[in-house]
Length: 243
Ligand SMILES: Nc1nc2c(c(=O)[nH]1)N[C@H]1C(S)=C(S)[C@@H](COP(=O)(O)O)O[C@H]1N2
Ligand SMILES: [Mo]
Image 1 (cartoon, rainbow, N blue to C red):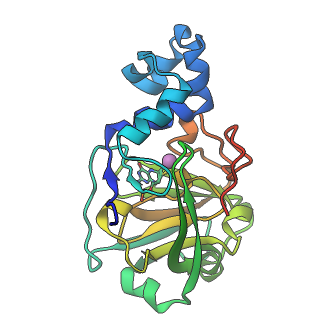
Image 2 (image 1 turned 180 degrees about the vertical axis):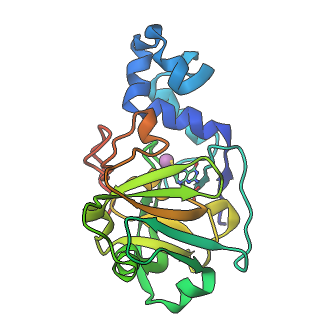
């Protein structure tokens, strides 16, 4: 019997915050400075320790091997393939807006790799397909002075970042397919990022913008304590590399 994924909304905040370095520090008393209030709102004042995170995640249906649908807004925005647009802007020679079928018409890259959230859940051997970020960058022409990318989501809130060097790796995908089919609404479809060598928070869902910029602008969770360079096994104090 296969179990379906679990939907979480505000619980993501709780789980992610428990796992972030700032979140952990907050438990050790830094919260008294008021930093926690700024970054985390009230949930940080609850007293869960690290071990109870895993337990709680498990109770909520988020163990290893099973997806958890995340959203920081509490909503799962819906967008048809026909209405979908990806805007590529900033320090580029040819600013472009691509439709879903524009993406399908470009060179398809596929890979099967793990998806790992920094909170501890991991899904192994996930098939992904899409267009390499590097291919899109070549197409629009990155200007000198550019060093990084800023990604936006049509959820209106989530953002992410990559350095240009990271973005040009062969395993960074603007993905339109996962698990052998279209990317569903809950997984951030019709188009999301898949940053294979990094923790799941880099893989921004409901992707609608890529801006080429002159310096790294930390993303949503990065402003809340996660490492900007999010290599699995090498960042955020974790040592269990995905493959
Ligand atoms: N727009 C958006 N993208 C997002 C998130 C989010 O809350 N909103 N959560 C991130 C985190 S922390 C993880 S682990 C993955 C989860 O992907 P899934 O919801 O498809 O399981 O999405 C990432 N991308
Ligand atoms: Mo995550």
